[in-house]
Length: 128
Image (cartoon, rainbow, N blue to C red; front, side, top):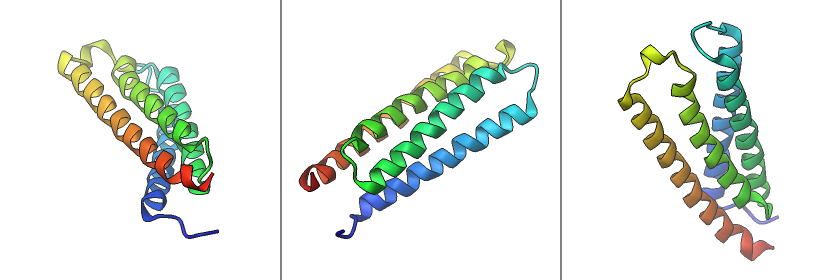
């Protein structure tokens, strides 16, 4: 197999780090179970994001045809996770600025992964 481009390698590593972070968040939330936090929401969103990031990272590493779709799905679930964080926090701890920061951070994250999906599509297409 020819050598993978550096961008593909870097993206696969980054997605793997996202997956580890998502699983760490699941472990942290389930282990803590703070009664003020809606931890089942946060654990579910974190688990979905972690699994999608791991699947996307593996698909990118293998240069599979479904890799761009997997990266896009990871971006969408990352956006959902960003919005779930303030939604699961106690109402008195969340302000309008918290929601704005979560929404803008999630949109930025999704936009980055959409660009990454486009890049992966460019690299996978010639190999197919």
